[in-house]
Image (cartoon, rainbow, N blue to C red):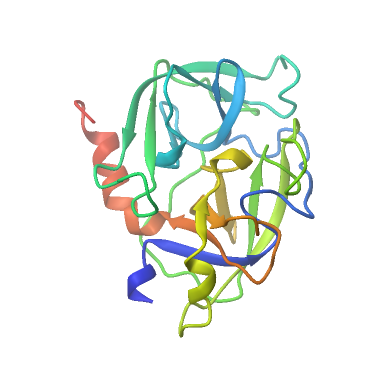
Length: 236
């Protein structure tokens, strides 16, 4: 498992698109963030402190990004929503545009106001391995199927962790691709009510195929980096 310690691999409902999922209870996940360019949803994110959102590094694009917190239906200007511009993009310095180190912190221009609609999700207190066949939750505003449009309401689905020992998944790994276009990249993977991963990538054209793994950045591996960046005044 050592070569894959930066990743968590899961099978079941797709992490890149909430295939077979359901509409989340409105505002039941107050840590969810919609990352938007020109008021259009691009990626998901996780509020982990009143001034920081955690997401995937490949979600960075040209232009100003706005983080929308407290949202359920992105078609509406809900009173619960807080729209905050990103002051600084902080992708991992080793991210090359491929799969490794696909993690990024967003420093918000203003602190989020904590309330019942907007609340940070705690990071794991220490690095801990995730057991095999563990049922986990994914959520986002991405596609609900390969040919479906992005969802305008928050949806959720389940994944099960996959044992990576042996060579059984080698062929699918060769076809892995990032899933930014599916809208759920950067969103959370939650196992036993604990934040464990960030939606990263899946097999190209096989987001709903259970024979191909869905891959998440392992947050535990990056805990020292996350904590260091949030404590550094001149970050990035």
